[in-house]
Length: 124
Image 1: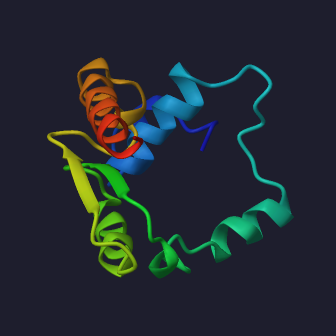
Image 2: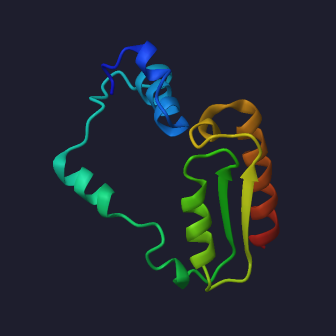
């Protein structure tokens, strides 16, 4: 994907891939990044399931996702499986895609404010 021409990247069908191309491959790429996985880390990544044991969480839980994120359905699935706590919240960043929550100042500001409020209330 790193070597993909920019004109092709604009036509990628999902925000996650399109935004990822620019964020990881162009604007925020570390100069030493190879933009590839080792075989073992890819296997670990592919077998990882964020919902494994989420039912064991018995502390306050805050999950954050962009309201326009291609991955929002995954966050909602994990959130619904977090049945070990009733003190949970899913905070949606209005208008944000998944990767935009990393760096777009308008979204980062909302997330910072939410985190400060959540931890201010819960960590007493």
